Length: 311
Image 1 (cartoon, rainbow, N blue to C red):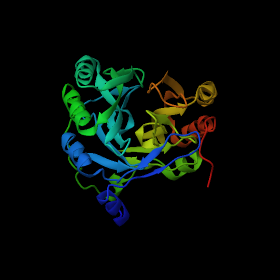
Image 2 (image 1 turned 45 degrees about the vertical axis):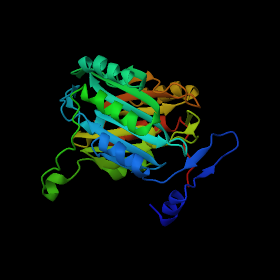
Image 3 (image 1 turned 30 degrees about the vertical axis):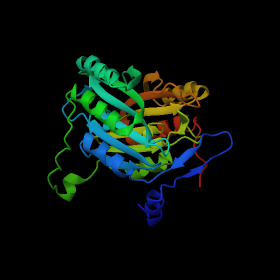
Image 4 (image 1 turned 90 degrees about the vertical axis):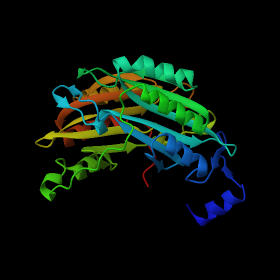
């Protein structure tokens, strides 16, 4: 946090910026002060600040072994529960969104716990096809007191077998064994956007051009409104890919056609939120082939969506 942020926080001052026709966005201390500390405590201290003053938590389903089309899915490919917190105003009201990865028998107890504690569901569906065991994804939404919401989410996650403790750091490996078996530079060049390796998966996020607003507040890309493209190496330059495209209604079928023309299967099409502006749809996909060739197909689909102007 900068000295300026500390000073403004100490004086109880917040700054605001507005754009004609857009919602007002409050500029608040990046670490959220004692409120964020309490949220961290409730959720095991696993949160990290993201762009847009978002505190995001990840809960990978490392307890599950899920196989789709012969590929054992790494948690960072398609099995990562997450929740993200963003302050809505200077009074402490917080907006929370997330996506919980659940087995079929976990859905009802988790939903019951969320509903009993004021956290709403905005979607429940699959993202992957032909996986074993079956995995479902529950999207959640809440706004109010951040600590109360964090405690409610902790209770609900406790109704599943999702690990709440931080994963053990991997043992040191030799340079050869630590090498990542994909040409990430070529993938980045093809996509026109770079990513990062996380948990054995090359993850790429591509934000949309326009501002997304929900509950009267801008929703940053780190709260789940950026197109996600994940690559898990499967040997010989191949990768299993999945993720989701974030689209307006007019973009849905052009993206479908671009993906199908490049041999990429569409596995789901649905909404994740209820009151966002503009209205968004999310399309999940799957393929397992040469990674750079698949990146070209993803780029063709990405070009059908509104993206920020090149700098």
